[in-house]
Length: 184
Image (cartoon, rainbow, N blue to C red; front, side):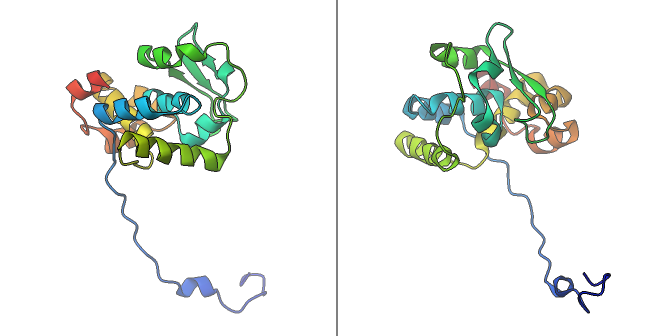
């Protein structure tokens, strides 16, 4: 606006800048996820399992449909319109995730049928029932950490997450033990 003559100065230029430091990456333990899965409602359980065992973002899970889960080929297709980065990606459907979702085969429509606000309420309600402190983004962080510990392949994990290998290496390397990753 200053350049166009609509204002004589930029009031934002006087604003104090703050340095925001990234916090530690928090993950759930295998015991935590076991409790969360046991406490989850029938409606929320697929969302929880997909977040934990496929690493999809909450917003991606909210947009995901049952037809995106390819049980026959063992993959989840996150279409460009459903991905945060607007790039299509294919995530492996792990055996444990396939087992958690087996009773839902044949369903249609969105996996999460509730509202955006309801999704976050379901997370907190599940955690409270399970006696586990909910950690923001911890399902995705857990998947990334445990998957990286198992594969030791930042590029592969980055492709599954829709991210970059340097970011995966920087945030998820050696956060968990391989033995815990195998239990996960």
